[in-house]
Length: 471
Image (cartoon, rainbow, N blue to C red):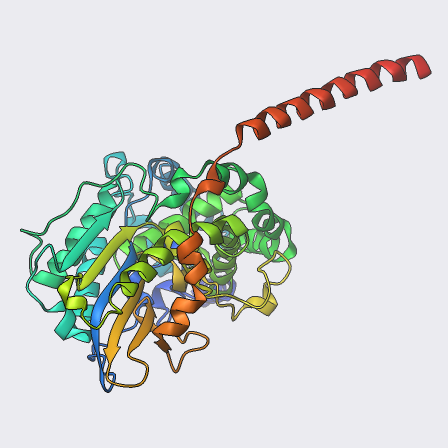
């Protein structure tokens, strides 16, 4: 009996030694998951009214991403493989005695089930509705004289892209602002909205950035590097596999982890237990590399496309400069609801979240404190707000920017409070010269490229034939 007890204790000790920490017991988990980060974990929590001495706000301009959504159809299809992967992980631990997940994490994984359906693809979730509703309430508290006015179509303008999730986000924001969205004038969305989704109507961007494999070059190089290769090895062993899992499988688990947490912010996703905190930070950087070149500073076209929203903001504020602007009624609030790329392109045009060096596959360690972190600048419901003030001082008009409700300490401004003349001068050329003419794919250029391709192919054939004679 004593021998049996000792054997049991030895097995238990060995098992405990092999286990990683218990994610289910983690009191301070890492919750920054790139563009799928829950807004609740990153926005500013302050509810105090914004009080700037001798100044009063007269216009609020907002560019917001939609709130938390369901995955798109392709991601939902990929997630259908997770139950089988879950069963393999459980089998690895229980029958093969491989793997290092603790009992609580295994129990959570065992009770997990996939609860998203293709019919819900890309739609706003209940949490996504709350993201926008409570964001509106906080802004209303911060700027009561401006945003607590009774709704009127002359005072408040809404605009959103042609998608369910942005329209539902606009509805949620109106609900938070006015107590109900009923009676609010929501215009029909444009199929090709060049103001708040310019990249979707830009063939040049689609060809050179959106559908170009070179955009993902730094991300792929990072995946092939030692840090990510070690991550794949460690996660595979932690889950009990004797072979390396693929990046497709990694993404399925990572996406389920972060979607789970974004949908249910007070719950624990068992799939997050597959990764350590450091590994989650590596996965975050991997996605930052993708979006840095897809929608940020990594490509000049991205910055150019950010001009449409910046021009709109500058033009709106410019109409308020006249001391007698009340003769020409201007809205108190302009609210736009769009997508992650539009937010990032606008930030790039404004020079916000710009690092002193580019993000690359080789500088992860030196960029740990980077400004371009999609978890902070482009989570679900990410938003950029600009507020125009009229002041009783030498500089009559001022502007303040907020990113995710955090005050932006803009370069050249006083603790975030910017002189309007400074901002206007800084972006005067952007506003006056902004157009999407560069988006066209020149027809002659296309024929020229075709001719070059034909000549190249012909030359290849000629050289091949001649080589036969030389040989």
